[in-house]
Image (cartoon, rainbow, N blue to C red; front, side, top):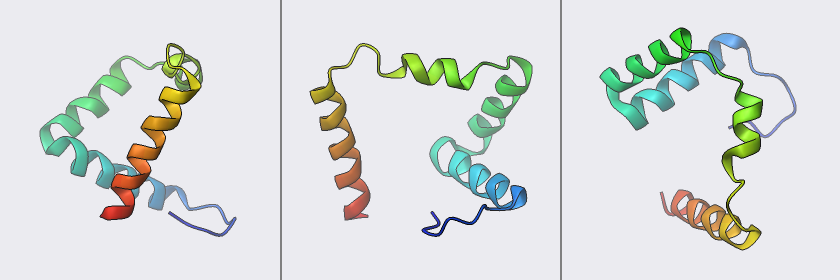
Length: 74
């Protein structure tokens, strides 16, 4: 993750995105994910709006802190 305000080039974002997909999903599921997105495009902004809809602020905070703590320990 960059700390300055410069915009990353598309090629770097594409490479970092693929690395994340491969690390988290593995090669086969990363390819399946890409195929699904291409085949069935969805409105990411609308999806984000509903992502935490059923969570209280406290629950969201707990999940965020838990995620943060896991990343710090790595």
